[in-house]
Amino acid sequence: MPQPPALVSDAAGVAAAVDAARAAGTCALDTEFLWEKTYAPVLCLAQLAVGEEIWLIDPLAGAPLEPVAELVADPAVEKLMHAPSADLIAFGLHFGCVPANVFDTQIAAGFVGLTAGAGLERLLDQVLHVRLDHDETFSDWSRRPLTDTQLLYAADDVRHLGPLVAELRRRLDERGRAAWAQAEIERRFCTPEAAGADPERAWRKVQRRGRLSPTAQAVLIDVAAWRERTARRRDQPAAWVMKDPSLVEIARAAPRNADQLRRIRGIGKGLNERDTVDLLAAVEAGLERTPPPKEASVPQRVARRVEAVATLAVPMARIRCLDQDLAPELVATRADLDRFLEAVVVDEGADDLPLGQGWRRELLGDDLIRLAAGEVALSLNREAPYLRIEDIHGR
Image 1 (cartoon, rainbow, N blue to C red):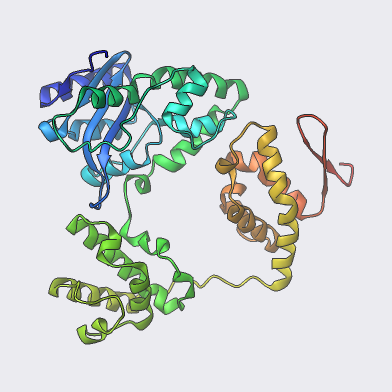
Image 2: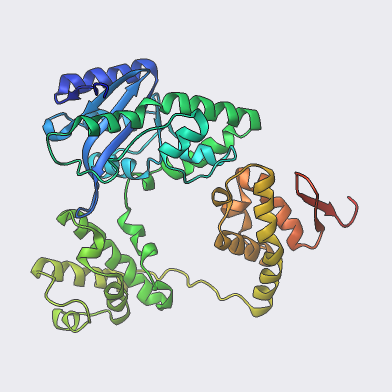
């Protein structure tokens, strides 16, 4: 077994790693964390590579991660990462940094004919023919000392990212998709939302909120924000503070005092005095809030037309992705297609949706608009490109 890189456990070692990344203008970055009983991922190790040099930074042994967080937010240094969502959330929640200049190999793979959900081992095998022999996926990274096997596993997570990115970029350039991939990576990872949950938007993730009246939805906005802030203060998963059904019922019932609150099913004795006061205050704030606009129901004639167009649009989208060597999950879900077609049919808001903008519109959106207008006919070719779109007016 080869010798793993030494652990970095002090500020001087972290500074050396970060300085090397800044001098190079690029680095490979990954973390090992636990995220089972806490609000934010618990960072147990940070791996950083510049060229062939690798640093394994151990915050549990005293190495500060603030300089690494500053690196994450530095637009002058490109961070090469694989599926970085949880890593970026961890840095955002712990250090308040917004990610900048990230390159995600998983998303990039989806633009060059590979799946957009492949793990690193599979991607390395497919692209570089590098095979890793790993069995540390479920390691407890908080336990010390770390074994040599764990350290080698951690180092391998950044060791090959540079060559992998170089080959993915070559393939992106070959297909003319570098700008598409970068735009998608920035949309997903280089925003304040990518740095952690926004309490004011937490209500959008609550299940069954659509059954509430506009007034109750206004209450839900503040109640869900209370849960998010309380979970962060307690350092617990939000669902441990309160389940979604209880949030929805509080929003519906709008209790005005502690007795009314305790009568709601699922509340029980889990709230202390501070929680009760803060939660009731959130209900009051919600009642004073201007309700969000209720989503208008779609007229039946529109719904039928959308369904008819979608019957053709769904296979059209899949075949177009097949022809273009694109992972379909990157382009649009069935819900995305339905929302876009609905907006096209009622002639309202289509340009504001993902399929109405940027590379998605170039790839598919404009043809969907023509399809909905009855301006095109679809047929199949025997060989790629399999989809043929013909203008029925001969234009």
